[in-house]
Image 1 (tube, rainbow, N blue to C red):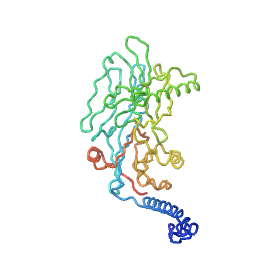
Image 2 (cartoon, one colour):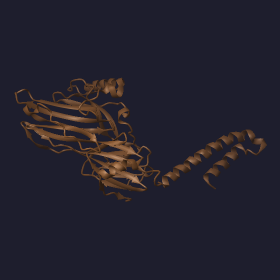
Image 3 (cartoon, helix red, strand yellow):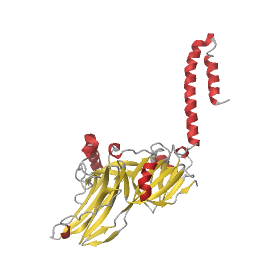
Image 4 (cartoon, rainbow, N blue to C red):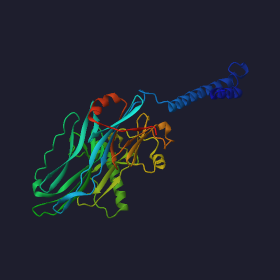
Length: 372
C-alpha cells in the first residue's frame, strides 16, 4: 500500500468514514486532514521527481563568472615608488544547453546591460615616471576606447592602481591605491580608497545615501564609531563616497573605511543588505555547509532557480545539482581556473540562447570535465 493510502486509512480509523452517518461530524474533520495529507503527498512526489530528473530545456541555465587574478609583486621603480603589478580579468561563460554543460572564456569582464553587454577592463598607462590605471567601459560589440592620460602627470613620479572588487549590471566597486610626489619638492602622498561608480561614469564615485539611503549612512557612522572604540589608533571619519562591495563567504558585503588620505586606513563591514544595488545574491546551501564540506572552497554561487550550485576552489570551478548537495565527492562538471582567481561578478540567465548569440562568438572554448 502506498504511503498516501496508509495515511487515509489511519484518518478513517480515527475520525470515521464519510459514508457512515454515525460518524459524520468526526468524518468532516477527518476530511480536512485527508486534504492536507493529499497536498503534502503531492508536494513530496514533486520534490522526489525533481530530484531524480533534470529535464533538458526546462532547466537550462547560463552563468557569467567574472574573475580577477591579482598582480604579484612590482614591475619597477618610479622614482622612490615601487609600482605594483597590474591585475588581470577574464569572464567565464558557463551554460547548460539540452543537458550538456559548455564553457568558454572572454577577455576582460562582460556584464549584461539592456539587451546587450558591456565590456569592462582596467588599462594601465605610463607617462615618464607616472603609471595610472583607468577603468574602461565599452559596448561589447565595439573596441574599447584608449583612455587619455591624466593631464599634468608628466611632472609627477608615482602610480595610481585600481582593482575591481565587484561588478554589477550598472555599477562597479574599485579599490584605488595611489602614491607619488611632484617634481617641485612637495611632500609625497599615499592614499587608499574604496568607491562605487556608475558604469556610465566610472571615474565619478557615488554617494552612499544616494544609492542605499539614509539608513545605510547612519549604519556606516555607527559601525565606524564601534570600530574606532576597538581600534583607538584609527583616526578619521568615513566619507560617504568611500564605500563598495567585496566578496566574502559566498555573499556580497557592503564595506566602508576610515582614513586613507595619509596612508593609514581601516576597512570595516557594514550590516546593511546591499541588494538594492547588487541585485540577486543567493546561496543555497548556506556558506557554512559549503565550507564544512569543501574545506578549500573560496566562494560559491547558486542559480536563482536553484538548478545548480557552483563552487570556486583553488584551480577549479565545480558544479553540483542542488538536489545532490550531500554528494560533495561527485560534481556534475568542472572547469579549470588559472591559478588563484577571485570572483568579482556573477550574472545568471535562463535565456541561454539570447546570451549565446553574443558571448558564444566572442569567447574561446574551454574544456569541461563532466560526470566524475
